[in-house]
Amino acid sequence: MFRFAEHQADIAIEIEAESREALFRTALEALIILLTGDPEASDSALGVEEHWNQSVENVSISASGYDNEERLVDLMNEFLYLCQVNGFWPLCVEDVLFGNSGDIEAVIGGLKEHHERTFSREIKAATYHDLKIKTGKVWRVKVVLDV
Image (tube, rainbow, N blue to C red; front, side):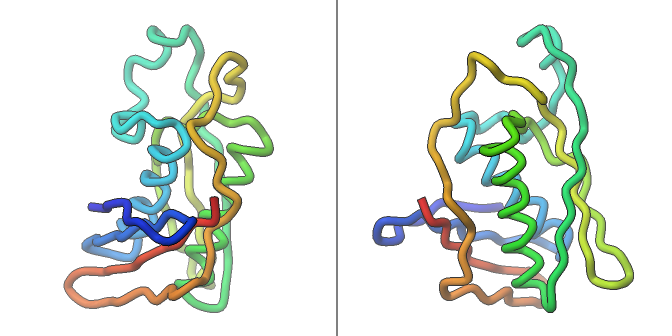
């Protein structure tokens, strides 16, 4: 579960999840909604081929870091680079996997070419501003995005 929150000139995402993997997945799903403006885009890629007459492809991104906060920011920024620089149109998060050394890989389903589509907004980066992942029965974090 996530919600968008006001944060001066930026955007903040407040996320709650049952696990570390779910927290990271939800962060990427929130970015999909912010970029595409489609709240149903992150649910699944089913029916996309018929709707846009294009095949959905999976792309992997990876991140690493000293701790979970650094990994989360790195993963979100890799995702933003994939979309805004490489032109990938994200539809869903297929998987989020943590390796033994703490590295993380996310598999994103989407369209490699989205000629006629434009993103709803530009997001410069995920930031470390007041970033602290709280663990327990429920994992929580507030991520501030520089827009």
